[in-house]
Image (cartoon, rainbow, N blue to C red):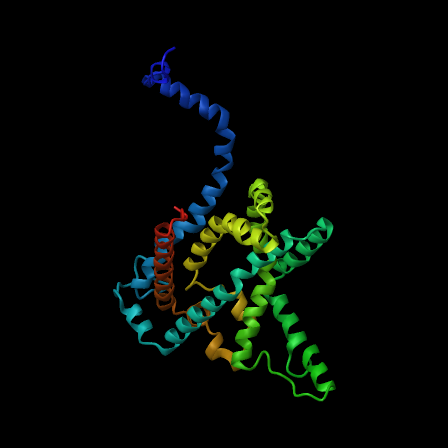
Length: 320
């Protein structure tokens, strides 16, 4: 009987004509998929890559009347002005602090909710609970801000009206700086926890059911199965989403802080996004705010690359 080595077929190198024929047959089978990619690629090229050329205004004394190419070049003047501004450092601090707190509090919340929903025995109740949890995602922050005002307003809010009726002092949820930060974080978790849970529930369904059966045979109870089977199965998804969240650690959405902020909490609520709007759009200092935005983007990329490298060093795949 011939050995497996002798029976193995030698690698056959394809001729150029065979390779060309193979490519043609491949594109005949998959041309519709490539056609479907044309519009997304066109969208990113037109609305993401072409506008990158306007970054040059961060190094110019930009004038709308002169245009990008005729405006005088001033180098790093606007970066120096930003680093000397107390408003910029205040917005930078607030952005970093709020995003770190959002990451600490908001990132584990959908993981915990996904595990709890997965452990529910009644499937209908599970679907209803999941639907109720992710419905707030579809509300705009303007609507959420109006709801927060109706519930937590200092004099007419439902919560404070109830406290006053009980003979207690009203609480300034939206006026006190510390309580505003707590409210800001709580509303962020409430709005997005259900939507982010969908990703983790999808990852849980991909875990091999035989692992749970083997753990049950070994005498593992529910908490042990969660710790030794569910969480390790979720680890790749958690790492990827954590890396992406680290890339947004200095980024800040505009509608959330802008809708919830008021003059009383401006020292803790003014983020880079609201500073750019207030100074750049309302005061027409486009070059100054372009420099701030470019600095924010560069730092975000550094955080993204650094967190990806750390993930790879501890044994995970990362995002590239």
